[in-house]
Image 1: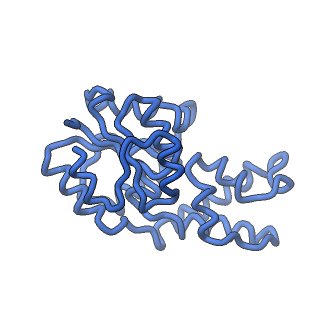
Image 2 (image 1 turned 90 degrees about the horizontal axis):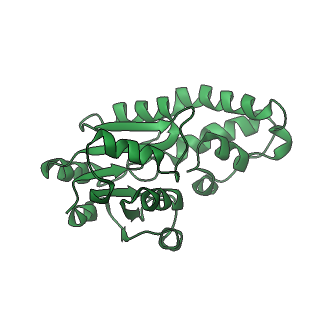
Image 3 (image 1 turned 45 degrees about the vertical axis):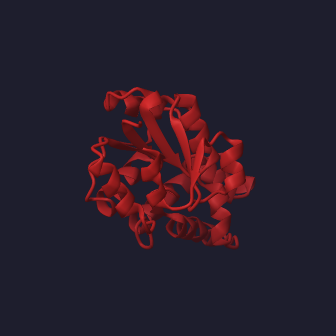
Amino acid sequence: MMKAVLFDLDGTLLDTLVDIASCVNLIRAELDLPPHPKDAYKHFVGDGLRELLVRAFPARVLRGPGLRARARRFEELYEEHAMDETRPYPGVARMLDGVVRRGLPMAVVSNKPQRFTEACVDKLLPRWRFAVVRGERPQVPLKPDPTAPLAAARAMKTAPRDMLYLGDTSVDMRAARNAGMFAVGALWGFRGEAELRASGAQALIRRPGELLARL
């Protein structure tokens, strides 16, 4: 029986794809580059802001100070537009309510920059208390390194083996396995069943409500 639940954010609790794609495509337009299709961003996200930009832009615009400049511009745009279209996935509210009814502590661990992770949780998931909300921070390795998930486990005073980790990408499944947590793949998110299975998912669910049977 699980004693705590750790959630990824983008593609798991929140559908953030449109706002991320819009902000990056605005930068591409400023550089006279054509937009990427929205669905392309399903494969660009997941490994932090730097990797998002590396995947979304040609190398020539990221050379020298280019990467830092693109990152600053993205943060400016995302500050304004992070929640234009972003919403919790259907069924997430009921899932979180079910976890709360079982008395289990919850955490969010994301590779999204810390301030945006906190803002999205505070404004879009205000009904629920998360014991830990961790995003990308200086000197802390990104997932799939287990540092952040294990820090969340310590904060909740829960052994990793007693924690369920729900995420939607190979990064999440590997982070869960690296941390010794039970890895559950969310099939409504950004990646598909084959990737999740190949990266170590121990269970897959098609709808948020199915999580409750795994607790």
